[in-house]
Amino acid sequence: MSITRVAIIGLGLLGGSIGLAVKARGLAIATTGWDLDAAVRERAAARGLVGEVHESAEDAVAHADLVILCVPVGAMGDAARRIAPGLAPHAIVSDVGSSKAAVAEALAAALPGACIIPAHPVAGTEQSGPEAGFATLFAGRWCIITPPEDADPAAVEALSEFWTALGSKVELMDAAHHDLVLAVTSHIPHLIAYTIVGTASDLEDVTQSEVIKYSAGGFRDFTRIAASDPVMWRDVFLTNKGAVLEMLGRFTEDLTALQRAIRSGDGDTLFDLFTRTRAIRRQVVEQGQDDERPDFGREHGA
Amino acid sequence: MSITRVAIIGLGLLGGSIGLAVKARGLAIATTGWDLDAAVRERAAARGLVGEVHESAEDAVAHADLVILCVPVGAMGDAARRIAPGLAPHAIVSDVGSSKAAVAEALAAALPGACIIPAHPVAGTEQSGPEAGFATLFAGRWCIITPPEDADPAAVEALSEFWTALGSKVELMDAAHHDLVLAVTSHIPHLIAYTIVGTASDLEDVTQSEVIKYSAGGFRDFTRIAASDPVMWRDVFLTNKGAVLEMLGRFTEDLTALQRAIRSGDGDTLFDLFTRTRAIRRQVVEQGQDDERPDFGREHGA
Image 1 (cartoon, rainbow over the protein chains, first blue to last red):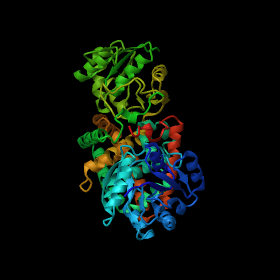
Image 2: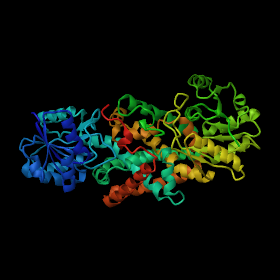
Image 3: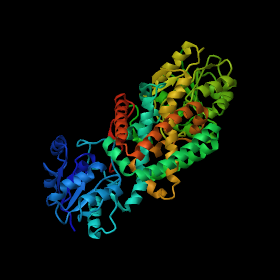
Image 4: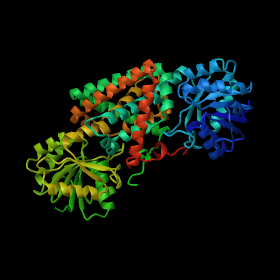
C-alpha cells in the first residue's frame, strides 16, 4: 500500500506542520487540506501549508490515500462525518489526537466500515493556529500508533512509514495503555501547570505583577505549558477522564506525603526524592528527548 | 559607601556566576572566594571564578567591603560563624538564599552587630557546582533585597548598586512578603515538579522507559526543574515552611476544583481557566521574563 495523496483536516499547529514537513522533506506525496474556519483556510493557503486548500472537507479528502484529522479531540466525530461523503473506499483515516480510546470510538461511530488507524505524534509547542506550524516539529519525536485489534496490517505499515518519513520514531500501542501513559507524561503535567498559573493569578496577598516579575524562579516554565490551546486541552481532559483522574489521585497522594514531610521537618524524605528525580532528567536528556543545555538553552542576558 | 572588594563564600552556580559577572563587566572590584569543599575550591581557581581562592573562609573575607554567602539556606549560620573572625567591621554581609526571613534570623544570631542585608537574585538554572556558573546569569533578572528595619540606608544603596552593576534590576521588599511571593513563583513550582517526576517514576502500570520516551508531551519540562540541587531545595522547603504550606493549600483547593470539573464533564470551567492562564504567559513574555520563541526556543529536529 503506497501513500501518494494525504488530506489534512484542520490546519493548525499539527496539521500545518505535517503539510510543511511533507514539502520540506521532498516526499512524493500530494497534500490537500481543509479547516472549518475560513480565515484559517486563507492563512493556510498563503503560507502554503498544503498543496491545495479546499472549500469543503468532502472535496479535500477526495482521492486521498490517507486522511489525517488534526482537530481537537472533541471535534473528531464532526470532522469524520464531514469527510464521509468524499472518502475513497481504500483510504486510511487517522488523526493526531492526544487521547486515543475516545477518538477510536468516535471515528468508528461516524465512519462505519472505514479503515481507521488512530495515531498520536508526541510533539507540539504552546502555540496554535495556522501560523504556528513548522516542518521540523516531528523530527526525533515519537509517534504512537494505536491500531484497533482488527486493523489491516498493511494499513498500519503504510501509516508507520508515513510518520517515519516525517522524521518520527514510531511505536505501536494499545489505545487504553496509550491513554494511561500520556495521562502521566502529558495530561497531568498540563493540568498541574494550568492549576498553578490559575492559583498564582488569583492570590490577594501577592499581586499579579509580582507573580510575573519573579516568574524566573520556576513559575515561568509552567506559564508556557499553561498557554497551550484551551479547546484542545479541555477536550483532552473530558475524553481521557478515567486515566487522568487515576493519575491525579496518585499525584495527590505523593504531594500529600511531601506536605507532611515539610510540616514535620523531615529533610531526609525531601532530599531522597530530589536526588532521585535528578536522575530522571539525565535519562530524558541522554535519550534525546530534551535539550541538554542548561535552562532549555534559554538566552541569558539578551 | 563604595564596594571595591567582594568575598564570595560558596563557589557553586550562584557564587561562581557573581565572580564571573564582576570580571566580564570589567568592574573595579576585586573578588576573593572560598568553598567548604576543597575540590570545588580547586575547580573554582582553575576556572578563575574569583580573583583569589582562599583556604579558609576567615582569610577570604579579610578586607572585603561586601561578603556574599552563596551556600544552601540551611548552611548560612555555619558559613556566618566561619567568616566572623575575619570580617571587617564595616563589611556588608549579604547572601543569595531563596528564603529570606529564616536567613536573616540565622545571620543575625551568628553575627551580632554586623551589617546584614539579605538578598535574593531570582535567577538560576537546574545545574549546580563550580562548573555551572556563567557571567550573564543575572542580566535582566530581578534581585530582591530584604533589608532589616534598622538597616543602614547607605549599605542598602551600595548593595543595590552592586547588583545593578551585574545587570540585575533591584527591588526592595519585606522578608516575610518575599517569602510569600517566592513560595508561589518558585517554591511551589519546584515542589510540584519534584512530586510529578517522582510519581511518574514510581508507577507500576507505566514503565520508566515509557515515561522518558514520551516526555515531550509536557513532562520533560518538569524534569528540568526537578533536576535542581537537592540540598538547596530541601533547605528552602524547611526554612520557608509557613508560606509553602499556605500556598500549597491554595493550590490543592484549586486542583480539587478542577478534578471535580473533569469528573462531572464541566468543560466550561476548564475552558475558562485555560483561556485565563494563556494571558498570563503573554505578560511573562512581554515583560522580558521569558523567551518569546515557541517551546523556549528549543531546537527541533537537531
